[in-house]
Amino acid sequence: MPDTPVVHRPRAVVIGASAAGLFAAAVLTEFAEVTVVERDALPEGPDPRRGVPQARHAHLVWSGGVRALRDLLPGLVEDVVCRGGRLVHIMGDMVSRAPNEVWFRRFLSTGHHNLVCSRDLLDSVVRDHVVKDARITLLQESSALALEGTAGRVTGVLVRTGGEERVLGADLVVDASGRGSRAPRWLTDLGLPLVTEREVDAGLTYATRLYRSPADGDFPLINVQANPAKAPGQGGVILPVEGNRWVVTLGGTRGGEPTGDPAAFVPFALGLSDPLIGELLRHAEPLGDVAVTRSTANRRRYYEKLKRWPDGFTVVGDAVAGYNPVYGHGLTVAAQGALALRGVLRRRGITAPGTARALQRATARPVSGAWGLAVGQDAFYPGAAETPPTAAERFLARYVDRAVSTGARSPRAMGALLDVMSMERPPTRLFSADMLVPMLFGPKRPPLDGPPITEEERRAALR
Image (spheres, rainbow, N blue to C red):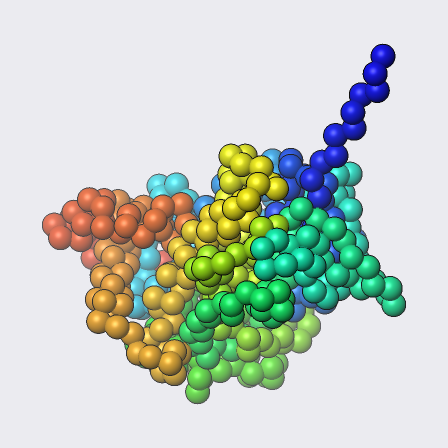
């Protein structure tokens, strides 16, 4: 009998074991042999990782991201919950004030949930589901130095491990190396034009401290959002996570930033336009010092708009766009971007001409949604951008404020608002009948005159 021909699968290299990189690697195993190149040594369990300095701050996954995670990695969400994470009902399990200082009613029928846990736990569960896949080769403590190939096609990546350099050949290279991505330089080195970038920086500084929760059971998420109309904008969040702990993150823009001084943490929270967070912290036991982060700008690279794009290369995650963390959309965008990759690759071959450009354009769609939500607020802080908001942006901001006020009092409008905020529906959903009818005609409940925290919840936290 003649020998059976050996069929060689395509090869893919993912730069970075970030959340976006691991989601992409999980998708690519369906189409190629996958190697993940990671600069750090990854922890074995839910421990801090050097390459994710923002991990100590509050993180969550919106319901659009929860749906994407369940599609990408079946069982992952349930594993997070089994290890102490929570699916928090929006708005029923939350006490939340909008940027326009309207308190949301705790409607129970919105149909939306946030996945809430520490970032270390989430990253650990993702690694358990992805890195241990036998179809993935992980190169730890290895750095990607440059792309190999031409302006027409990328053929691999130059990698250094220890003192040794070598070229990993690949049919597709995916850059998921985060905000510090060197892709713009790599592309110009191949002879391609410089990518257009935009930055909108509200000047936000984050300060986070862990506390032992004084309340037993499922305490609500507490969120006091900053108001762009009142600079400096200041806000905070109490995120109950596994281990009976609270992740407490406070934020302030230019002129009103929190510091790393532990003695100033609770006074800062008490000085917010509503003192609820500070009041709840008075009797909570701090666990460790205060972590401060100042790199919170919205920064986007418009790779999808380049007139020329090489086959065999695509950029995903924070390497394309990073957002002000206060909006919590980074993980959701990463998961939805991986689904977009899979959708393209199921329609066309990984090595086919034009596939990489199609991948770049497909992953730009969830990026655009999150970018609009973040910049639509942050552009109004003084000094956030080189040019002031346009008349159209000001109109949209006023409309969104009205939509938020309507959603705070109408469950029908709240559903439409959360469809957009959760990244399940496009922003045009805000102009649907579900929003316009309550906005124009009601009936709407009167606005709340204070935070909708129950006396039982308050007593549990203050005992």
